[in-house]
Length: 362
Ligand SMILES: *Cc1c(COP(=O)(O)O)cnc(C)c1O
Figure 1 (spheres, rainbow, N blue to C red):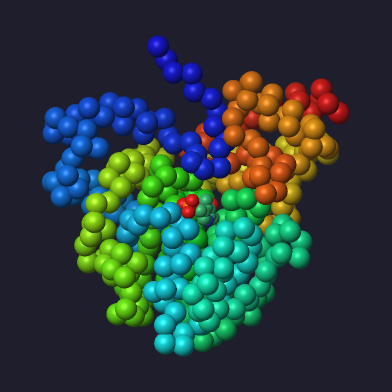
Figure 2 (cartoon, rainbow, N blue to C red):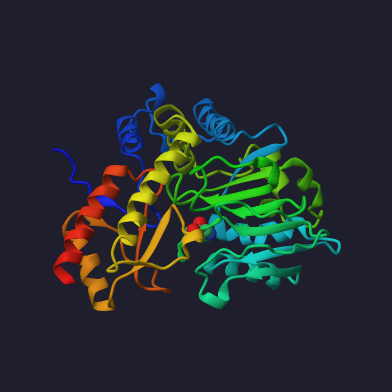
């Protein structure tokens, strides 16, 4: 029987490419001729070695990372990185700038402050409920890093271009837009992303770190909270989340071999976002919440004329096979997350439904 799958606009955990799910299903009982499931194999086996090394190699190729960069797999989600970044990089009187663009940046700032680290909020868009990305920011040239959230999953904004920091390395939380577009790696010292938005299942966080920053960590750090441990042990100081890493590997393979790389992925993502925003801009029933020049291509946040209509919209959409459209509980409204795995056809189906719904309720 063919499974009855819906168009899934969940913000995270979120849709995975069908091809990937089918491959997992196909090799679930016997992975690569081992006679075991990938979940039942030692992380020290040749089978898992191949999986993790292939995942790292694909991530490096996709993003164009050279040998200065390490690709690591950590646990504790992106939220653990909020504390690990300042813990590793801000010792001996060092300081950092943060840009506050929403819920997740606010949390990153808080975790640095809890540790008493010397950080400064260099810019914030809180004055207008985070509906925009701040421009023309003056950064401290002596900062060790500048922290940004590249895509704001809840508020629906995204850095279209990364800020000029005058050479200070960017540390970016890319949880909800990693691998959605090519990036200029020269600007970055560290990138982290929880897998469950745009890259895989929950349970693993990818960290990309530049070699020279590893030396900033003090000797007093616990082993598991030090990036160099993960570098030295190929992310296997302890048992890694094997199944999650395996799924990430398959998603990266899909990106390289089926989609054809990040230029192509970015073009598809642009088209999907243009379709959806274009449709909403053509009428006044649906109101996108982010400023036009700050709109996210990944999380499209919008309001309807009333909260009552929003509830009806989300419920009826689901009845029509379109799921996950409720906005985050902290902001309300609606949100369509159109990550890499969401096809243009799914976005077209959403627009068809939105059109019908608006006609009925205008
Ligand atoms: C979801 C999300 C997080 C939190 O991720 P966890 O893996 O649950 O810790 C952090 N930052 C951004 C941008 C997110 O979208």
